[in-house]
Image (cartoon, rainbow, N blue to C red; front, side):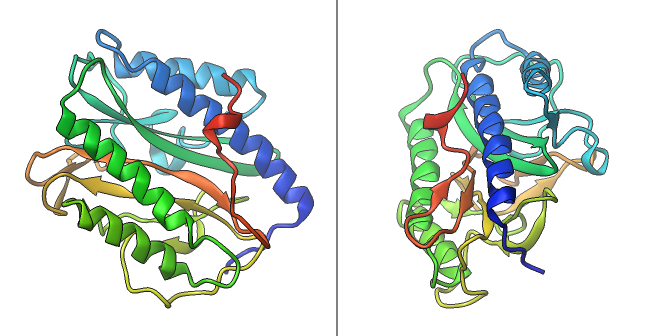
Length: 253
């Protein structure tokens, strides 16, 4: 069931999402050659706890870390470890924070040092596909209007959309109804109503859309070994323009 948040719940979500956006910013600042993914995870954990919140992902369905850190051809759910970031890597960080009984969720892909023009374009297109979808995150549109806009933009630039993983509603639970695919035909799905909160998160591959699930049960990589990028924000549907609850401009760091 899709939940419509009241003003008290939205105020709590704004708090959770502000912490979440700040955690993403912190992780992004730490993406540099010589840093391990585990060091980034530790710093984000300490930051979230320092704000009186809890990392949403830690122990979620058994996930062993506070951040998903996915490097190069890893699309999502990369587990932080001893991998040392290198010049030219592209690094996706996905983070959530829980406080006041609600969650925030956001992600972004960051260049490690100097990366190729091709990889920067992948990052740019992935972010822009989110903002193309955001144009339709307005009361009265259908959910698939967001999905169709994301797909149309990414594919028009020569990229592929991951189909097996999608965005989602968010609030008292990390994953709530409705699912928010990054592909589809416009004019379908539930009608968007003010008070809905959704996590919109394009996952875009430089090559084919095919994926491979790793034996750890979490890590998802591109089947062809080409790079992938990920961009996500928690979005509130209002009577007017959508509110970006994990607005990077409003972060704490």
